[in-house]
Length: 70
Length: 253
Image 1 (cartoon, rainbow over the protein chains, first blue to last red):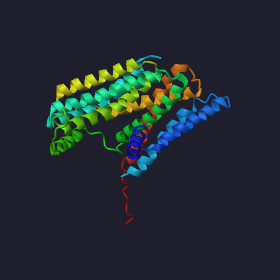
Image 2 (image 1 turned 90 degrees about the horizontal axis):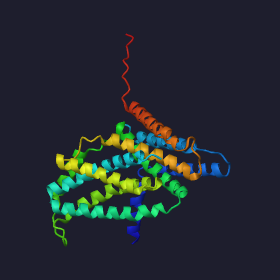
Image 3 (image 1 turned 90 degrees about the vertical axis):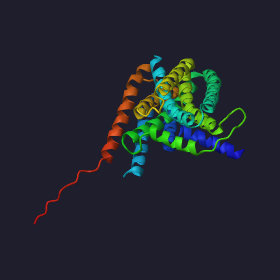
Image 4 (image 1 turned 180 degrees about the vertical axis):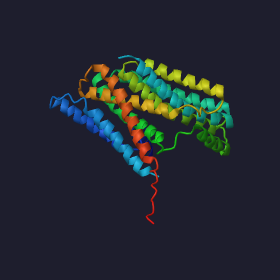
């Protein structure tokens, strides 16, 4: 049963998160920071999530390129 | 919000996955047996339809704010994955998806595998190959259709768009009778990744309580901006991969 659960979790992890967990972590952190800025500081931080997502994509690509450089 | 982005995104995403599923179904059907292949495909389609029938209406009961936060986060993460892969392939850091090569490998494996009957299935290998291929590729489509459809409160339209893409690819497969190797799969993946990431950003931020400047019209800026950033990264990676020009040293003597 535990083996089946582990395989089930691994499938969904690979399905949603894929090769680089840092992208998922960046999105989660950016969403949390945006919510804090909106609700606690009263800042309409619409710019934060796109900035973090684009930065996370660049970071992830840079790491992948460094590994795959011929 | 206009339904066109929903229809187009789901259609293209579904077409990409349907092309990949078609390769597996053709390999199973042409080398093993069509009856068991169709049984496997039908069984997978029934499972996928059940997932849509259960998850689709269930999601429409979730309040729109939390739904858009969760769906936005998932789409942004999922979209980043598609975009990352498309950029790495376009810039030469990963091999392009080769339908013909995959087909040849699947055919070789199907020819080598032993047959065997189980219950009402004549060829268990053909059944499982077809079932797994259609189910795994189909799950991505179901995920995109449900999340997009639920956020725009139109799961029905998303499901119709997905079904239309499957029919178009299936018709092309029947007509060509070979894997659709000439479909610009990476360009389609790039476009879908751009749309998923853009909508993920839009809905995710909206779910946290952000008010986008221009409301829904902000998407008219987010989508092109995401595409430009992705194209910029592709160009940078291509330049980094290109060999440096050789300098000729002139000898002093």
